[in-house]
Length: 575
Figure (cartoon, rainbow, N blue to C red):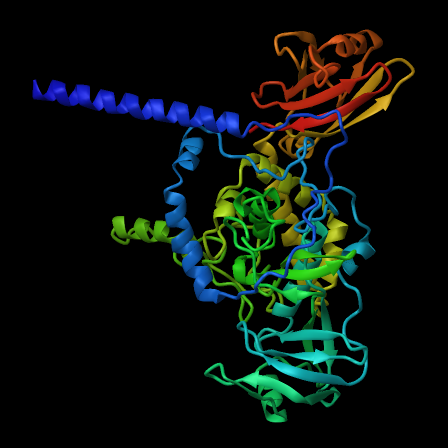
């Protein structure tokens, strides 16, 4: 009897939990139902640049980043039960800052560049640069650089421009400076706000310590900077055979620094900041971009909000900074084996070792590693697994990345040609051509792995465009997975489609199959589309469901016909 009572009690509890999950997931689904299409032009500018009062800046530092990402954010998210319900129901919360075409509009966070219109090789090389670096002639040292792990100082050139200069470790010339410059060019081309970083060389006799220059002692106390302090800094860095010093010169950003942005919540002193950062696609997508370029040190301390004045308005513009720990560099030495594979404090990996009584060994610690090029460090595509890549600290925004977010980011990564990647690597000015070729090859190989993984999780049909015919219209699209499928020697794809009224999903206007990446819409079919709908917002709107034969996932394309023209007014990939 007691066992029966326990069984009944267990069944009741199970039913209660199922009811909670159903109610929770249904409420979330309704609450986050995206706007699937609009007859108006897609939003390409998310205007978050209205004038605001000057915020208060802060700088929490490395320890805060470590504890915040590893502990505080994780505890806070542990009590976000709707988030857990959504995951269990297979309905994660999609990003908010997405237009009806599935794209991220331009904002103070992100600007569409190579992913929307391919940049020239010169544009890739130039990146955010306003100058070619400090001008020739004397350089005035303004203060010593005491923040971060690399030695350096601030200088002002003859034009009056101010730069922060940072150096390579003595045992690994070119390692950190090349990584910083190359990654800067690529992150800019992706769409992020980044500083101007250029490779620069100078002689000791070009430097003059300003009479008002300051530095900080080992206790963090500010004091006057002397020539001895400068020589002490230069004594710790790599020097070239010709006596020159090679550095990365980072041009001071315009505006006033106001601390980094967090990866959870909004900035309370910025009225423009209304989208929680963990629900921004351009922030979530950093997981893919950082994995591609091994930006393992992505964290609050390597972001920066600048209070800028543009067009008569004053607002915050959000930057990514400090790319010394990217590609094969860990700033002061090549990447250690755990980079990209585990967090610096990784409870999951620790538990595996604990409960296996030491039998479990992380494979990345036992792999043989050979440093081929000291100027490149350890950067390879050989063991690169995009979905399992980890940065130094857990970040909620990156953990919240959905398949749609990853697909958006992967399309941007895929937009970079081999020639563009080689052009970016060229800006790192690696003295060994073999090292430059190797680095270029590995970046390309990682791009291919990202494409293969994220494109396989979506229908892969995209970039829809309409062309007018003598009679009717043609809807053309690209198969982003075609190249991957050709590598596996599969037969040419057959696409199945179904065209329905957007107002009545059961009202099928046309269905069939395609062997080419285009669909012709005849005048008779267009007339049926134009007559469909039961309200002003859906009249003349049809939904095209397009999938590769044999696959469940389909792209949803919304078409609008107004008796004259046919337009794509919405694109939705699978969730």
